[in-house]
Length: 146
Image (cartoon, rainbow, N blue to C red; front, side):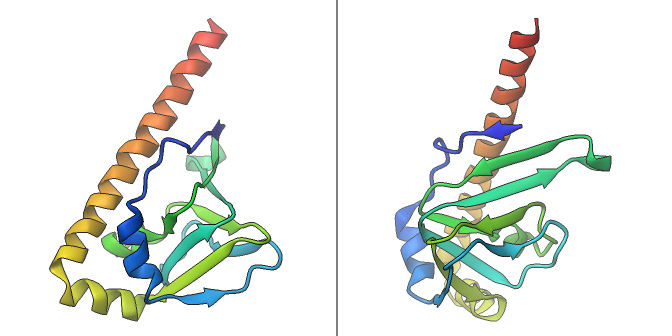
């Protein structure tokens, strides 16, 4: 299933806060940032270019793939929840990627409660947007099949 991510909104001011603490990662060819099921190692910031996010359903029953928009905070839900990644991400050649380590992310969140709250709000908004996009796609598919 392909989903258009143009409805996803990331607060540019939140992205800038993390980008200011990030180190740049080279991306002269496609680069795997993380795989579904891996523990988080930090936050990835996509500020130029594109990346592909993909999910595989239980027992491989379905796949969901979407192209990200910029700016985007990749891996934020896993960091905030302390859980393994629920999707894989591949940044495409030429993308501008920043990285904030898990340690530095934890320090930023611990000492800036407003940043922690804004990060939780971003995760909540992304969750709602993702659910809406998936349900819209499923609804469109059901109407086309009828």
